[in-house]
Length: 317
Image (cartoon, rainbow, N blue to C red; front, top):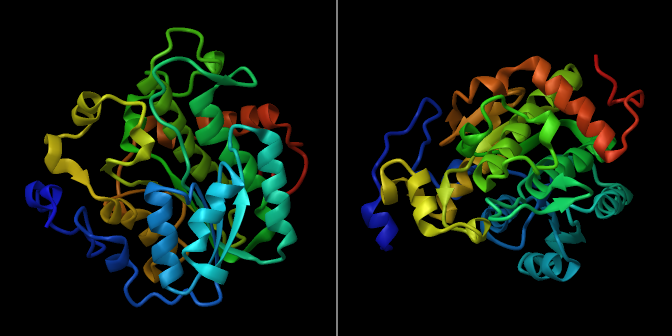
């Protein structure tokens, strides 16, 4: 038994029958994904790696994306022929376009698309094409990837966007459309929170735009987990983010549970536009339900990544 498991607080399960202490294997027990194709970004470590392992164990073929091809190949080697590695640097729009093109060329309808990869709490301002790097990577990269693969989504496909309860740390006004460069009063955690708020708004607006075609989109908070994602953060900062200190930390098996639950559990067929935590629907920051903000974010994102807003299926309903 690990030290973490000994000090973790035991939480009762929620309405779904699962909760804080559930693992990814537990929430997918009995789920058969044979013949299904699952695309996951950031499979080379942490939650992406565990999500890949568990969904492959349930029979899915994995399309595993990582920043570098060598990292994607190394991660996918553990699954043998049941995985296809592809390079995708989310902060590089050309790399994202190339990745979506390679995925589309495989000719495999995508049943589950998991936007998992991300960067967190950069201590100093960094940018990609003049945009703050966390927003560029966590939101814009996935925005372009998903839009590039809409035509490859299978009937009833599920899109899962990894957000975080750190979206409560977003700026007071929500998305700072006049400061996406991050140059004004940069704060690493606020910038991260803004990118995670964007993930929720993206899932909700994607739900609205694809309404009626059977595709669902939801956002999830995986929990507070000690993974490579937090490599830029001081441990004291991570502890302050976890109410109840160490008792609120999850291990990676628990951290991947909400993602796997939302991605694969039969009970969620047709459920869309929700925010999940601990394998149950949760209540996000009020800004996350701001339809006007979601629509504006979509329009601004289209401009920043160079999508044509009149091109179906991107045109608003």
